[in-house]
Image (cartoon, rainbow, N blue to C red; front, side):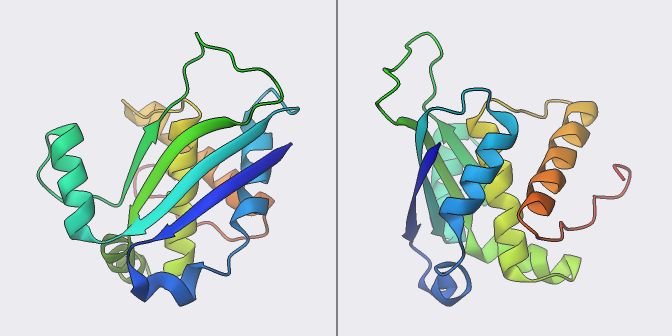
Amino acid sequence: MTVTVYLELHDLSLSAEVSALPWQAWFRTWIAMVEPNQGKAYEVTLRLTTDAEIQALNSRYRDRDTPTDVLAFATRDDALPLPLEEPEYLGDIIISGDTARRQAMEAGHSLSTEITWLACHGLLHLLGWDHPDEGQLWQMLTQQARCLKAVGLTPPKMPLGLE
């Protein structure tokens, strides 16, 4: 399986923290853990931006005029199968560096851990995972923790009530 991650840094203060991280290898591992079709090629965009930009996107596409930590815009349409030789573009993951920085400080872990956690969360959304209720949120957070452990990272602590 091949995975291409297009990294877009729209928050230049994050470049030293995240540009050298092994995104291609991590996303390949994470996709392999949850995706049944191992022979395919995948592409995804990971965009690291600011609260102002993510708030504009959140307002435009989700009618929520507030910043958020991560947005995922999936392009997958199972009704339209692609030839195996064509990479499947899964979509865009947009992370606010401002919000990630605040959340990392509040939780007491590194910014790179928070961004990696959010990137994995966004990827799971692109692959069809969702959390409309507490039970599915727990399943998704548990899968995120497994994914981080699989690439040798220590996941953040689960939110209270979900451990």
